[in-house]
Amino acid sequence: MKFFYIANIRLPTEKAHGIQIMEMCAAFAEQGSQVELVVPKRSNFIQEDPFIYHDVPCTFTLRTLPSLDLIRFGRIGFLAGLLSFIASSMWYALFQKDAIFYTRDELIALVLHLVGRQVAWEGHTGQRNLAVRMLIRLRVPIVVITEALKELYIADGAAPAKILVAPDGADISRFNIAMTQEEARKQLGLSGDKKIVLYKGHLYERKGAHTLARAALLISKEVICVFIGGSEEDVASFRNEFGGNQNISILGNKPRRETPIYQRAADLLVIPNSAKDDVSKLYTSPMKLFGYMASGVPIIASDLPSLREIINPSLAYFFTPDDPKSLGEVIEHAFGEYAEAKKKGVAALALAEQYSWQKRAQHILAFMNAH
Image 1: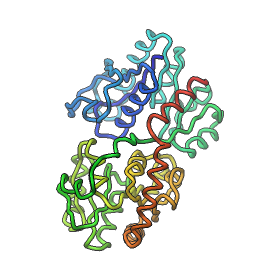
Image 2 (image 1 turned 90 degrees about the vertical axis):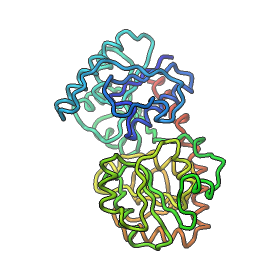
Image 3 (image 1 turned 135 degrees about the horizontal axis):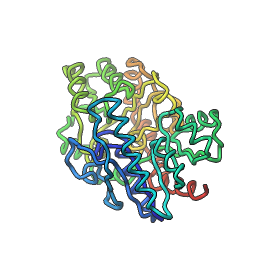
Image 4 (image 1 turned 180 degrees about the horizontal axis):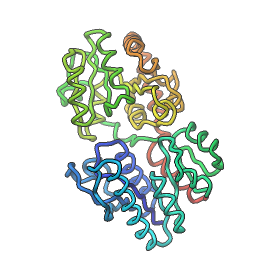
């Protein structure tokens, strides 16, 4: 089966959607599909090979199509680039027979459906624009990452049978590394005599990294909060605000292949998503959560519906979102009963097996073949 994933993204990219798309293409290929990832041809400040940068096996084809590269002109430039890439994708698709198409871009999905191609759209953020309303009316198969998104689109008129809930996932095998915590810390140059609380990800406000940084000011000096990830601009801003504190270590972006080592070096992993917007509160399915679970290291998470869809108090500790004091107290509590915390980490690891990229690909392919 020919499987085309159409993605209007710059590749490689430091953003999380690049990892998710690349991992899913590899997972679709592992199911026996002949997979091609189709992206626009654009300039890129990241010059590394996408497969190496994203640490994904080269088991599928990467194709670039002509597209206007005008993002520097803001929203108008973005729209011009999108429309030109849609045109290129449409013409390319017209010459592909006996194939199915998949995309996270609702307008691309709509155009491909209108030209008679079998397509599914994957929704992530609760878009409710004209293109999404048309996809619902035309009964195009929709894949969403949370139950809240499914409920949203059913309320907008979608047929329940036309929506699959498929949370994000992780490559579980990545985190099964033959390395002790002491060895991981030594390799990374991290402190061997302090307890380490790790945050991995971007430093946007809705990701909650600021909440953890403020909590670090309230906890024991025996604990250090380590931050990895973020764009150069965000890291510089974050260092300017929090870098002078001895409880905080801001390391910036690190190669993805080092993530399992950092998690092995940690005592606690924090996912401090904000409750201040609906995407974070209701609709997100953070890849970091599944990666955290796959490491077996105890997790502390914001008490949000989006996270509660996957984990519960038997698997992780919860704190009040956007509340540094609550987070600090939960960190201290987890260290105070660390044997119990480790049991939660082991239970989360067992559950993580259900959320591999391979199983996600199986569910999506079965859903698409049924429609």
